[in-house]
Image (cartoon, rainbow, N blue to C red; front, side, top):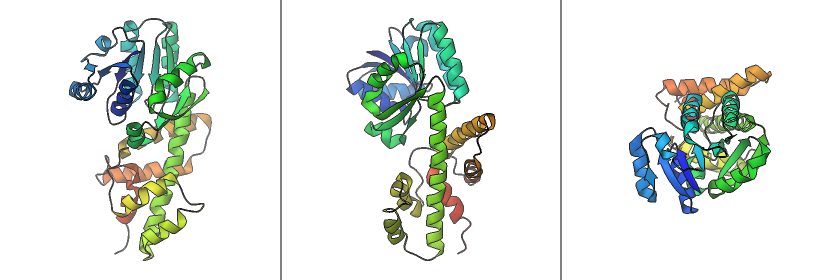
Length: 288
């Protein structure tokens, strides 16, 4: 297919690359044009400085941008340049509200919009092993599955527009608690004078085990916090989840508390550290 991929950052760049390797003709667009040019050179594709021109003859637009306003701006810019029957797949993590809004606007133009946030981080994008949560009409979900297959480990349709975003909120809520749990367990282990390697080898094989524990305790122990998903972005995602919870009546005491902890990490200068940096906050308070 002829595709346009907008948003070629640490997630979008590799994802778009997998589409190229699968045989699709992909035109790249990024607000920082040099990043799009670098991507195009790496994959022998073409990049455009304007989204409208990047969409010429494209059958589908795939988005992986930053925030609600970025998605809204991209979609409203794209619609006059897309034909009826085209497809928009949005991998950005946004509010469910903007997903529903964009789906309605696109439907008026005869274009199908799917909110399809991803989980798996930078490593998942590079290795083509992302989990995708989808909201949108069932009629074209099979097309979404087929198109995203080059970078997908699993894909689930949760319901109509906005449902994918709400599932991603649940994902981030669960991650927040899991990371804080690992950070506290490691902090406690150090404070007790135990060997972290022995402790975590023992507990990771039991009920306490998790992806976060297996992949992050050792880097936390070395105070290494450069593994992709930044604190700034996690706070953005948790803010979306907390806003949704206020609307639907859900009680997110742990997520709210961890969001506060992340604000303290930001104040420590860790805005671009990865989410496991909750441990740094605890260690800053540990008695020598």
